[in-house]
Image (cartoon, rainbow, N blue to C red; front, side, top):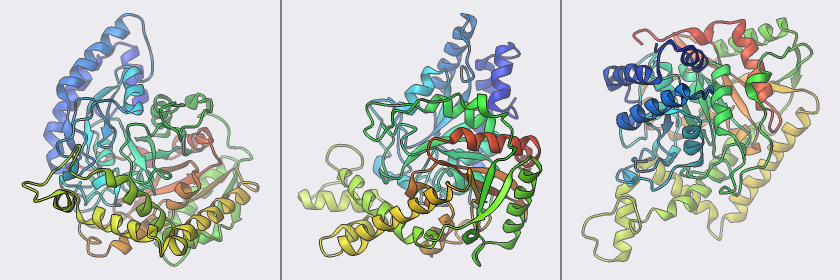
Length: 483
């Protein structure tokens, strides 16, 4: 049962081959058995899961149907869940139980999903390796000595290890797509504003976006259908009709124009990954796509711009965690200043403190124009590059990451080396574009992903291309040994 995709689970439930309750019990037992070696979950919600599974079975018995009705999933632990710990992977929120459900959680619950638990993550979503979590590093099921990617590494590891078929995740600079690449999954970052951020604890508000992580593009389409839509509670949510993502999966790729940016193939890219990317291009050409070389000249400026903008927004967003209203509070503070200093100093980990300091510096009176304002101008140039490219092509293809997953601890002493691993994913967040990573092969036994980018609100196009690619390749069907 644990090898079934979301689509297969939906068909099995509809055909009464098994019940949601039976499936939920199997997966909960599997998590209890295997997760200790992965550390992919922060909280398990067995009672909630079994009650939701029974309710889903009752709804099906009453004549209801739906692809997500009775489907087991997990939520990244920055989506607020009423009455359940929502920690954001931080000591700061270790004791925080959200008083309400995030819109994504509420929408998926209404669709009938079964919540198995909350997945581990880099603290406040700051990281590319899932090593900064207060609850310890997550291990990559393909090699337990390697990172699963971050910050959605818990969701990725759990799905890759077949502990569950799909999970929610978030992407601020690549945190859905990079873990998907490192764990042989399909991960989709929607257009900014397509999925509500209400109840999603913020890292960088103009960059954060929720999305699905699953094994196939078909499953991502199913989960995104339940997540997407306008939310009046979120001022950045966009009132745009949500298409039927599953309906567009089988469209022909004949004549589809695919752009391959020359800037992607620089000295920083592992040549073995470059070869796998070119193999993917050839596969799509066989399906009728037309390949064209394009240029994204301002890509080289994306990482420095991102690592000014994101920490600046983080320093503002995380100012609310002060030891006064909720979250961690230091013991026996001498005065209000001591309360603030020690609560934040003890509650936040090193990476979060580093980014808060960088952001506060970039926003300070003497440096705002030199850093933050200039970074926002670069952001506009990055967007303009994409707009020009999409006048020539329908989608853009390239590597998701410059290297396969590295060993645990290999980059912890050199944060900049870890930041550089986001070079291909960050641009989509700066521009607000949808992006998808799909499995494309292996290097030294570790998975490699190919990234697709599309114009605004063209998630269906990305899912269509990925689905057609997956019908003609078997990379996404590979399972890590022991799982």
